[in-house]
Image (tube, rainbow, N blue to C red; front, side, top):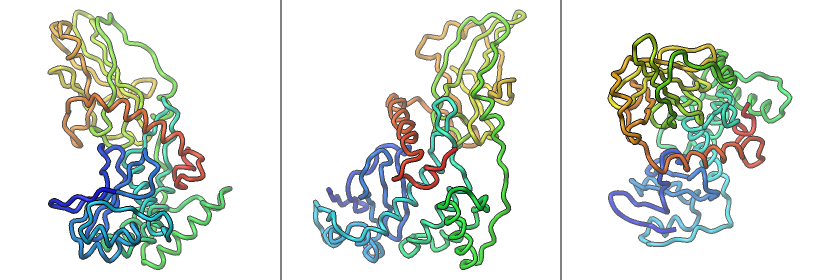
Length: 336
């Protein structure tokens, strides 16, 4: 692995896109795994070598001394006790899944169970608590846990519930009461739905940028659809987007210079909005007929990344491969 020295000491190649980065903040250093790669060894950015030296050997083994001692290239040994590194990776991956898991009815990627995710994350963090930058990370994670439904038919889930209950008692944290999140709109979205009344002069679809909406607010794969419709002597821009497993965020869409509030729900469960437009919208060149869905309280509209569709398709394929995989986290294996 290449080691470079600038403002921070950098080990290995940092993942190039935030959508694929699984992060863990340790004392004095941040670890990063590319979720699409099958490399157990993370990249790192070391901003406080003295603090990081207390635990970095648990991640890089004997190579940690060379990393901190001025080497420009290091080889991480294959043999060693990597239980701490594996726990770090699991915690980072769960944090990634909480932010980026591409739940999609359209693509057949089921939503993660947040109760399982938060429980598994709390256990993973407790295993590596000694190297975390945040001394209250485990307590905070336990405060987000809701009771799992036990007994279950899965002994791993039963064991996880028992482990979390013991941790909560040790840390003096009372679990939050269970909530039953509504996924009605997510289920309805699978059925599709009727058309638009009036005469459609133009129509199209655009991918939704995951970075512009809260996680789970919309289906990760289904495109946002738009139509310029003539109805009763008026020209209207109509927009619809398929909701995800956690709808509820205030959404809007931008098409050219037109802003549309997505504040309705149609009979198929899709999130919808409409705004009157000038007939001049019909003269927009094809490269400006781009719909950008965003959450105004979350992120501002941004120009589309031409590399994003291929990257997101790879993430969706990766997520499908994790469901039921023995190498996946329990949260991913039990997605439903």
